Length: 532
Image (cartoon, rainbow, N blue to C red; front, side, top):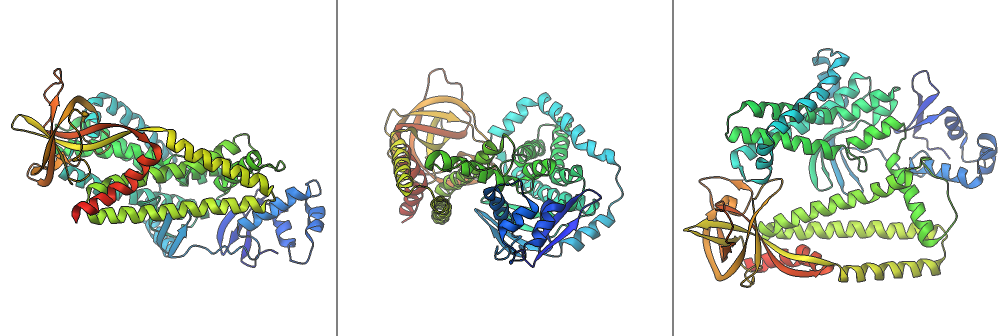
């Protein structure tokens, strides 16, 4: 039967209604769907409801519609509880919020002057100007990406980006408030292992106009687009200095934030905008179910089911929505593991704990998916056979796929020679003589190969090196303790190298499983053992 917490509200003059649970909009529905839900009193049989409201639909199609109601929390026993001050959303989102967001944004909106509609052209204009400015100073943009950043410039950039992120979320809330909606919650969250602010704009489904809903979703990225354009144009007028490096770094960072934020396969702003433009609530969840059904049918058999999103791209979009978060989490964990290995025993312990949490979360998701497949009524013999074959294929592929085995160190040029250095001595001290190394610049966002050389092994020796020999941050008066494990003989045609940078030593190849185990477990543990 219909949940007692469900309410319906007509939006505008069109025959469109919003179904809400505990006052939170969940879906835009038609009048016929409202009538169907109101008739679901727990006493009328489903076949009677189908005959009355959907006689042209098959029993299977009608049951899928009922299941969709349940998944949206519209039926009794669905257990859909509105998020409060502290909420968790699978797989890796934790939110801490204030529930006073509606009053906060109403007060902020009253302080703002009325803006003309042409203000929406500002992000477009600034994007064009920023692109031109970036082309005019392309060499400087590349340099700030691949070379160490002054410590003061980095700190300033981090502060500015934090403020812009806060302004980004504020823009979502103010735009929704301006259109007559109500931001329900606002606060801080950990989103796929990254810290961020957020504003809950689900009330946007009450907006009649699609363009308004899209504007709410894109108001945040527009802030970063304008900031990127302003920064890149301003950098043209600044002389070479740490301030100019900071401005360029902020501009490039804003561009990257916009590009990532517009990815439509994760619950970023690009996805919200696409969902709003298509007027397809829960687009990601529904296409994932379509993709899952297709995979189950291909692997385990079963009948053809009707798509939840009747569009040709539903299955490809669902597959991309299924795997993109996995890639983002993998990249985030890999980056954390790399930083943890160089950050001492405390960060190594935190890295291992994070990897355990991610592994348990991923295993739980896979097991739940397999249970759903079994409950779908597939042949148990075929299920066991396919699962065994897939497991064996993954194990064999991981053992056969070759992966380059490399170690990334720092280099430091002093007294006419180039030394290989690292923060700890255990892992890389076994690099043999004659190992080829690629010498690279060291930047916050990237690196560039500047030459090659070979290693001449030396016994590990404690040294003090500039900060940018180990991390992509420069500070003239800051030195850090390190260990020198050898020197580099440069290739004859190699130009004079910079004083510091990265050196990637090539140690042959290994299989994929060994590479993952080494990067995720052996290296963090070796840091702990070295500390002991």
